[in-house]
Length: 542
Image 1 (cartoon, rainbow, N blue to C red):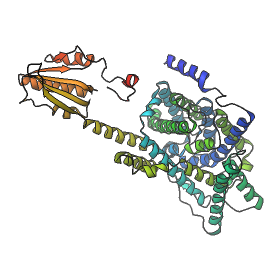
Image 2: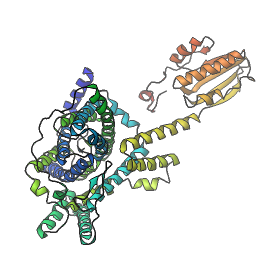
Image 3: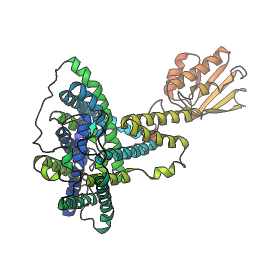
């Protein structure tokens, strides 16, 4: 573990903390700072709303957004990503807070962070590469819909919206003049964001949209919902606070299940967002480093009264689309957010919610994979099903469940397709005393082992049988068991079997049975359950 940490630290110092990944000029600094300011403005209502969902004070969500955002911006695996308090975690936290209170939540967040650090040290982040592309498309589409639905609460009368344990609900919908005014301002913000890049790129389009609409609302004194109607964001610096919970086995039993679920959800959402941002910025790697950064951030925030968090795809998209490419943007967003809490609350609370809703609606439009609607008819039926399944489960349940379901369905489908590929070509050898030769084709693994056994005609085959694995690969213990079962059936029938082109580790395991005759002169060197992709470029174990 020390060696792993040392390698991580060395890599982090030399590569991932370089501030000059982009040519750092005054123009670049301006873009990064303005992008950070835009993100910070969008973070405020999100953090407040998610705090309400979890059933805690808004400052608990704001502190989490600041601390998690700052630490992950400094040490995370992908410059440009934004992290903070998220709804995916909040809906899990609400039950814990309702039953045991805030102190148990803080202890849970600390343990959650430690679990994420452990996952990073063990380099489990690399397993995110097992997520198929259809699952990624479903994740993006589902999350876009979730972001859209989350904005609907802003169209309700402020002060009437409450948490039902699964999100914000209840409340009276705006109607008449207030509703039309809200919609007009939202459309105006979206229009400014769409037009601004065509006029100038001096100011990020989302920031221009927020600024212009806020100026109009404040200047004309329009009576529309504002950030201050959600809650006051005024506060002091987050203070060091050790969670006040009994240090005993009972407490551990309470917080461990929540910590495991929160850690898993946080890492899955963060790593998927990392891949998405990487596709947009052309950068790769950093999965394990991101796990450690998320873990450190959550551990620290738990000791400073924050509710914990993970990567935020909406804010990350705002940052990337606004031009944020380095760690400066993420750090600036966290610092601006803290300044809002300390000294700028009176100004920030005047910003109309319509402007922020307009920004998030543009995020939805930019996040949703619209091309997936056209490729549904072109891709295999199973892939189309996985895209729709993950999208629906993301909306109905949560991201972690959706991704797990998508990966399982994709894996089962892949196993089934490969299980059907096993077959054999047969012929009678002219040089082996009339022996019947089975040339096995297709992978032999747990899914195809039964089909493999069914290939042989034990009763009618001649006394000598040769099984050639030149065009096959033995993948697991089920495959070995199937080979041994075939050999046992031929031995019971009084016949002789030879196995050719098996790997040497297969030899060692199979000869223990004592009744196998194996030709090994031209056998390959590949092994069972080893990473064959290193030598062939083909993914999978062989």
